[in-house]
Amino acid sequence: MKTCSSKKADGTPCLAHAAHGSRFCFFHDPAKHEAVREAGRAGGSQGKLTVLPQGTPEVPLASVADVTRLLAMTINQVRRGEIDPKPATTIGYLAGLLLKSIEQGAFEDRLAALEATVAKTAKAAAPQGLAAVFSRPGGSPR
Image (tube, rainbow, N blue to C red; front, top):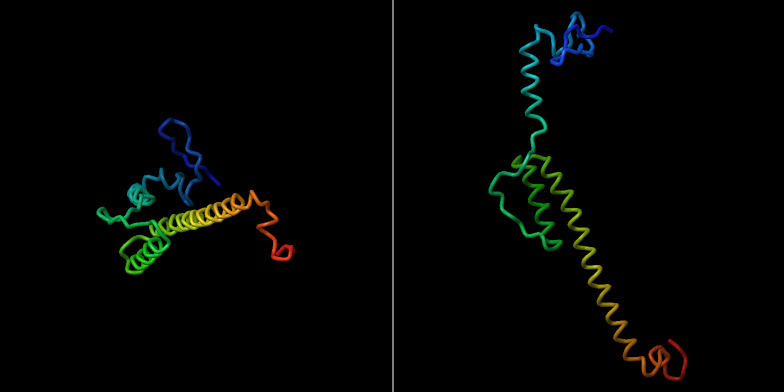
C-alpha cells in the first residue's frame, strides 16, 4: 500500500497510508479539505466533559436510604432524558462505593459494641475467674 506523498509541518514525510485512488492520506488530500475541517470540529466536540446542569441541588448521602433516593432520582432523570447517561453511570458507580463504605461503618460500629460487651463481661468476671461466668449451677459448663 502506498504512503501519503505529503510532508508534515516539521518537514518529515507523512507515513499514513494513501487513500484509494489518491497520492494523499485523508488529512492531506486537497480535495478533502472541507471534510477534514468538519472531522476536526466533530472530533473536538467528542470527549467533552459531560456534567450535570449548574444549580443541581446537593443531596444528603449519609444513609443507605439517602443513596437509594439518589439512585432512584438519577435513574428517572436518565429515563426522561434530563441527564446524559455518562454522568449517571459515574453517579451509580460512586453510589455503589458509598454504600459499601456505609455498610462497613455499620459493621465496625456493631463489632465495637460487641467488643465492649465482651470486655465488660470479662472485667466483671475477673475477680471470680472465667469459670464463674461460663458455668451452670451444679458445676458443669454451658
